[in-house]
Length: 123
Image 1 (cartoon, rainbow, N blue to C red):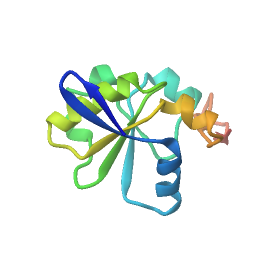
Image 2 (image 1 turned 30 degrees about the horizontal axis):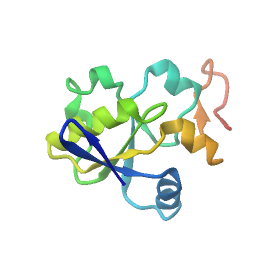
Image 3 (image 1 turned 90 degrees about the vertical axis):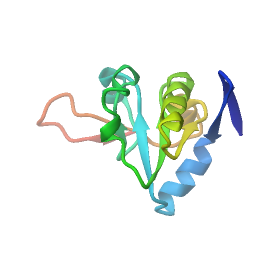
């Protein structure tokens, strides 16, 4: 599925496809563009956090040679991130519906410990 964002079509994938890729160990990197607070409350295992407002300055941290899956809360910020990365020549797709849809489809998220003595929990 493609989303049109300012004359650039944004490639998107549904959560079910990303879930399948994760189980098949397809070489992808999940890029979470939400705030650190949103990330701490629940994120996909192994995801890289670079908030959207910092993405331009931190482009060097985005891995090359691997497909990037951008996600946010509901898919709007990650569509903006996808557009930016596409213009930089990076192989990237947007996760449809963000982490909200991911959870609605019954897939797990992790939470960061509230302090260093707590263990991670999977919801």
